[in-house]
Amino acid sequence: MKKSSIPSLIAATILTSIFFSCIDNDDSYYIKCERDIGFITIKNSIKCAATSYGYITSPEIRLLTLNECYFFGYQISDTPVHDVYTASQIFNKPKEPIPQTFLQIGQPDDSNTVAIRNLHVLFSTSTNYLGDRWIFAYSAPIRGDEKVTAHFYYDKNHQADQSGNNVKGKNKLIIDVYFTKTSSTESKEALQENYFTTTGDLESLRTFAFTPEYSKEVTTEPNGSMYMAVKIVFRYHQYITANQSEVAYVGSWDKDVNQNVYSIIEYYYTNSTKE
Image 1 (cartoon, rainbow, N blue to C red):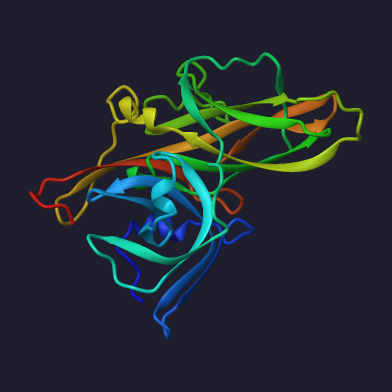
Image 2 (cartoon, one colour; image 1 turned 45 degrees about the horizontal axis):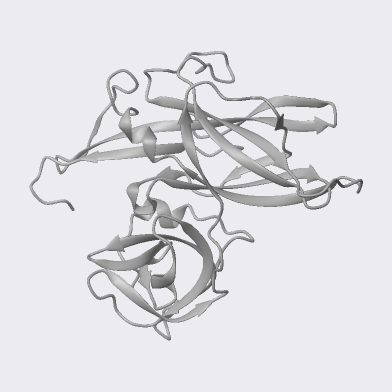
């Protein structure tokens, strides 16, 4: 089966990890994905999920909530109609969406916050294909039924990077990720490492990220179309010991052997038809 013409940057940056498991079987003309992320949206008046292989719909998907992200699997074996595939099977049917929090503008509320062990970003480029939803995985030491929730902030007055450089106005943004811990019971159990996944809705970045105050560099392609790419680094407090943490960064302004380059992109077209 020929893959749909979704933005190649998205498909190429899906992590080949425990979060995803997909097989593209060209010989049998089907795609089977045991686990993927789907963003529920509307494409050509069809309620569907934007996935790593394209827009997919089914009776089960049409019951899910718009603008939310879910983990599930699927099999598709036909050609798309109006750019949307119909799944012949849905695996691991989702019951609840991936927890989602919205970006807040201003100084972070650092009261009652906790440090986490590690933070991972599962996509390296944000486009409106996924509704500017970013998927984050993180681990933290917890007791019992404690839950650790991520909160996202953009503070224009605190845009110094790990080298101490103020990046505001240079096609660069630093997003602070803070974490709070909640529990329904008081537990005296020993600390154990646990893993969490959350969706960060960073769509509000588009209201200002591409304005001259924040970004000035526009890239022009040979066909005359233009785009602006704004790089993003995520900053958080990393757990060292029960009484110690340090500021850590995820992402790089340039290619790095240990860090990906994360960005949000806005496309501008000089031609009457988008390619």
